[in-house]
Amino acid sequence: EPGAPIPGGVPGGWGEAAEYVFEVEETDAADDGLASVFSAQLSSWGYCALFQCASYYRSWATCQCNPGCVWHGNCCHDYYEVCTNNDHRRRYQPAPAPVPAPAPSPVPAPGSGGSTKTLYHNTSPEAGASIVATGFRPGTQGWCGGGIYFAETAEATLTKAIGPDSHQGYVIEAVVNVGLPKYLGPECDRSLNAATVSKQGYGSVSFDPGDGREWIVYDPALILSMRHVDTPR
Image: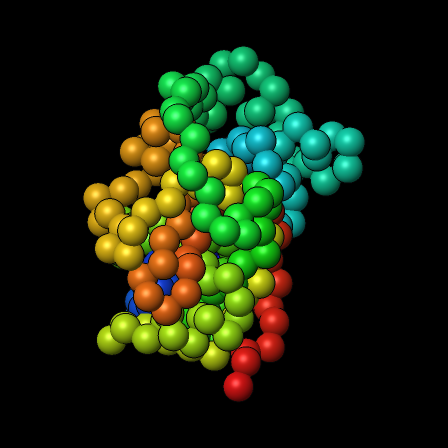
């Protein structure tokens, strides 16, 4: 179903989202029982057991598995069993990431002040609706490795999502915590990933391939909010 939540999120590389959602929909169409099986697992296990406990808000979920749900009154039915019991916490929660060693601060690019930016991604209508419903996850390839790619304006996305597998027609406006950016040259570094960027003490990567600056994050939790906006013409 177009726009349906996809467990784990949708890849955020330019062009990857539409292809991924198409493959998911093809698989769903070939297996009519998939939705009922997933629903049965969800009912049996609960959201927190299935998707794991978290420290952040999941905009696509109907209930939450983070400590804030107690205050907001929207905890999943298995939150207290899975996320507050020490034995379950050790089983379901990932180990905390190591604290990165301090790194020298890079020379900021012009106009890059602040750690939060409003950025834009362009993809197909089907993929875009699934991203808004489910969220992003890092892609598998790109100039700066497998990350989640954004442009600085909606108009700029028109020259970004132009590869052979790219699609357009659905622009997502996102508020992104870019943290401490790592600025690279026009060829960036295809070997980058979440581990290497975090180990160097950076929260994001930024580069300009020649048609406008791009911003790449590797952790979906850094995307604070998203919404669909009109595609520029």
